[in-house]
Amino acid sequence: MRRWIMHVDMDAFFASIEQLDHPEYKGHPVIVGGLSSRGVVATCSYEARKFGVHSAMPISRAKKLCPDGIYVYPRMDRYKEVSEQIFSIMKEFTPRIEPLSIDEAFLEVSGMSTMYSGPKALGRAIKDRVFEETGLIISAGLAPNKFLAKLASDLDKPDGLVVIPYGREKEILAPLPIKRIWGVGPHTEKRLKAGGFHLMRHIQALSDESSLIPLVGNQARRIWELANGIDDRPVETDRKIQSIGAEETYEEDLTDGSAIELEFRYFANRLSKRLRKRNLLGHTVSIKVRYDDFTTVSRQKRLDTPSDHEHVFFETALLLWNKLMQDKTSKQPKGIKKDVEALGATTKVRSTHFKYSSSKDSKSNYIGSNHSTSKLSGSSERNFMEPPGPIRLLGLTVSGLDEEVPMQDSLFESPQDETEDKLAGVLDSLESKFGETVIMSGALWQRFHGENGMRRKRSELKSAVDAQSTNEDVESTKMDKGFDLDKNGDVGDINKDI
Ligand code: TTP
Ligand code: MG
Image 1 (cartoon, rainbow, N blue to C red):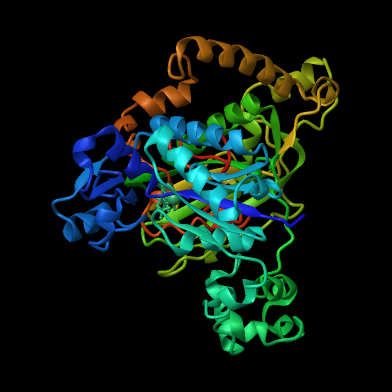
Image 2 (cartoon, rainbow, N blue to C red):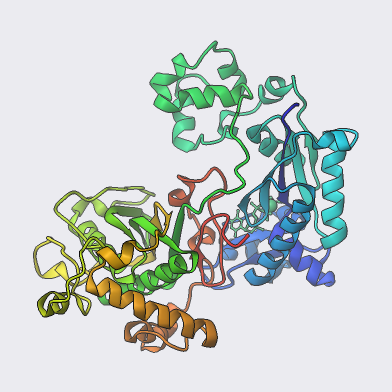
């Protein structure tokens, strides 16, 4: 039986839903995005694209290009609802679905085309069904593998239906630029071009990957295979969440350590809640910082033991922040710098690696927030050091996620962890009954209601829609767009909530 993979991607997803829900918008340029001075375009209808508007463009620029467009603020709940509806329609055709983002998925359809007159008829049937049920249009690609299916769905957008048949893979790929190869970003592209490889056919001319090794190292084999249309990756129906993160772009730049501390407290609180909800523990904590000149740096640390504890995330963020501030090179001149560094053995955050001890002494060490075993010296240890310049964006991400193993906690938890677990359980249940802002810690209350509370309520969208966002941190573990928005502006896993 021949393998057939289908890739589907909704056309102008958010904007199409706005046109669906507001028929008066149909046929007009609709731009969905943050509406503040720093807002950016999440997406726009194809009518708006004719004016040169596109995703991630600052709204201010979009307004110049398309002054008569209809500008609307995103309604994530509605988009998620429609996304779920579309995924359940597709599940009627096949249970073997790998969601990639809110509007995109791979479908394993091998063997199914025999029920139709061929792969194209199968693709048409799924497209028609989605349109009948939702009034929305998908672009679809069918091909012998994932790489080609994704490429195919994009070849004739909008309202595309493209089949790449067996035997024509190399011919279709040959004239395409190498940047269309999955995983080839700007750096790899530059290196390949320096070696004279501009189009896929230049790579196809090689009998194997050996000439690519000096240029791209261990990526050589994959790049050579993809350029030749070879891709054996299966459709992964149970793709695991790889990371959960929260980040905010600020309406007004942050300039002092105490404001930064409050933000990391908030992020740590959110992430720990979201991990608990999914029964997950995270192994690696990373922070992301973008200065006002768009220089972006990140730092990460692997925990000794995976955790879902707010204080562990917060204190790791504190360590990472202060390490970053101590690193003189962290503030670069203009440009985007991705600078991920694992901290060495000189810093250590206690996670859940402690045997329970009921002695008064040990308890008094752990109750309260002074829980870090940081060996960073100096007065900065407990406080967030002042930033070298205004901060435009902050983020905290937990990755290396695994299911929580029951029992482990009760045996090895520190008293603070155990207390926090109990408290978290109570807070979670109160929140689920009365809503998120009904009960919160003093620091978080201050964030929402304190003197700077309003200032910090500015983030309309996560940084994926922040102008010039590169999304590199998410993209590095994903094969696709690497963004997902929820209404709280959190960066979730790409397939969460689908
Ligand atoms: P895309 O599928 O990339 O874009 P689209 O569906 O709007 O348009 P098309 O596929 O026809 O080119 O992304 C899906 C949704 O994700 C999009 O409607 C809005 C959101 N999104 C962002 O919020 N920020 C972004 O930078 C991008 C690219 C998308
Ligand atoms: Mg789309």
